Length: 176
Image (cartoon, rainbow, N blue to C red; front, side):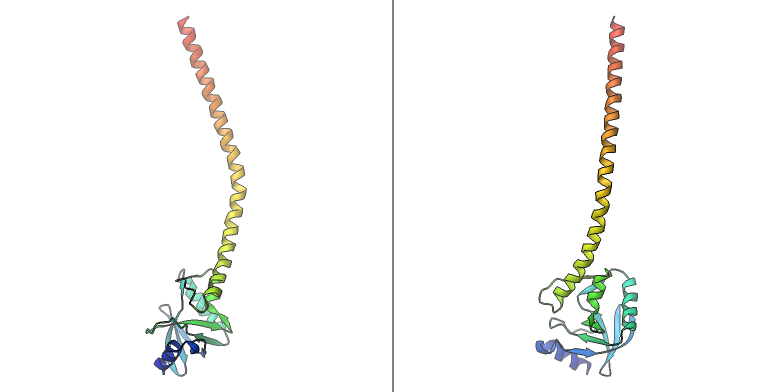
């Protein structure tokens, strides 16, 4: 039955948008173990990678908190032991949620993937927020630092000119 679901979903693109109900079992070795139609399946999240192991703890908590879990297979998915799927928790795409939180990143950018645009928008939201925070910090530090450097250089020039003038006077006095 497991092979039948995979074959139907991957070989017939018009069926790939079909969602299948799953029952969560556990997460082990970065794989999500579920039961679908009385078959045990090992799933991976399609087209995203976690930034660290903490991400998998968040995934587990999100899945446990969800009332309804479904999976959808992208038409480009390859038949492997661990099936790469889009996972939906209460109707919301899990990959999108992880990208919005900044916990994961997109593995491969391919416009043919079913939810690619949706996932890219979620990732851009996170990147825009991070970019704004960093640019705000720079705006306040640059104007304060530049005048300090100018002042230090000015003082050094005055000191240097004063010493040169003194050296010149000493030489003049020795010659006289």
